[in-house]
Image (cartoon, rainbow, N blue to C red; front, side):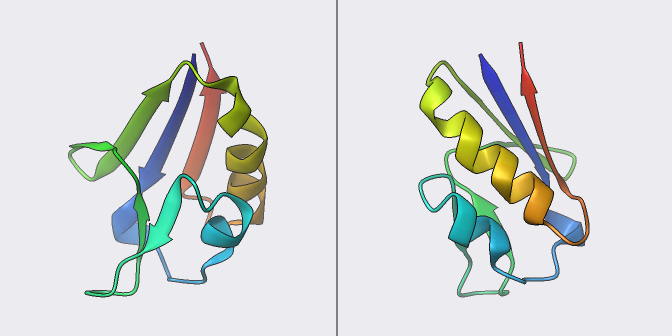
Amino acid sequence: MVIVTLQRNKCIGCNYCVEMAPEQFQMSKKDGKTVLLNAKDKKGFYTIKSNDHLILEGCEKAAKACPVNIISVKLN
């Protein structure tokens, strides 16, 4: 299982995550910060759990590209 977590409140709106993994991330038109699609919010940490290992590479690229290091990707 792939687990992706985003600390959205620390997002600076650089858009790198969307460029690396557009299937999982998109920019909000309301506040210019990224949104982790289909994520559940738990105290500012937005998380998705997916059995689709095809998302792993893009999400790892997004995490590495993020200048404020607010995306984590784990395999469980």
